[in-house]
Length: 270
Image (cartoon, rainbow, N blue to C red; front, side, top):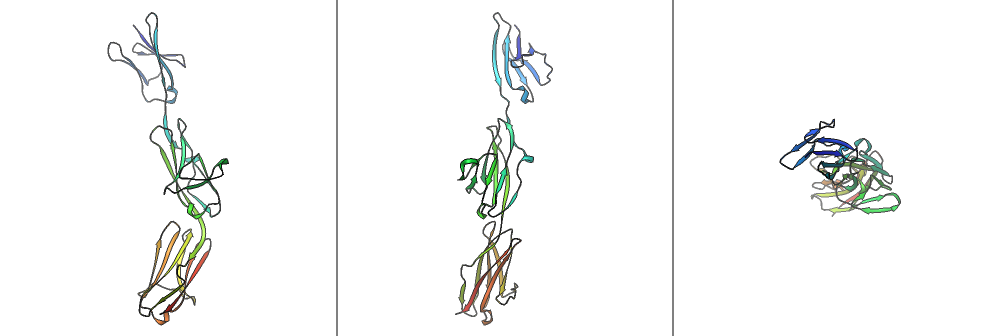
């Protein structure tokens, strides 16, 4: 009894008995006991995909077929995929992510912080979703809240899935909001003045007296900045042991490459 291995779609005989007759060093045949024959393919390639048949030369001839599916895990095609982006507030951004693999990978987008994506994809109009499918993510009328890291994730059912992180920077001129424009405190006490600033790119922030004199940090003036998001900062000015001369107007000023803004606080004694 002899067993032959045939690649059915190519009509090519691969092996007869334990002898490989095709010119392919990656193939071998093992005969591990009386009636078990195994065709071994090492370092499988895409061209190995197809129908394999083992034939036994009995009378009548017997055969069995099997289909070999060759799969390739996904891989991001970096040269065809967007990098980090900068866009002015109100502008548009098209993020593109391409991947190879077999079966063809599916691409989804999500924000790194888990917040919703506001996208306009094709004919669907405006949509909000935590996950958006497709190679292209189209963002229009972009606002500062859309700033941050976006992940494109490619998967095709063959582990592992792969991802790329893209940073979207949204630029706008500074905006200052003053929570308390009139602050009263008794002489000799400490008082804190607060301004909330939004700016991108990062701004230079400082304090002035109303006469234009810049305030410098020393043992009486303590200045601090606390970041609350990628673009929001809280400016604080602590004036220690209030003097009569400290009364009057204070300005918080914020400047970046796009513009500047200022807020005013009036300090009075109680």
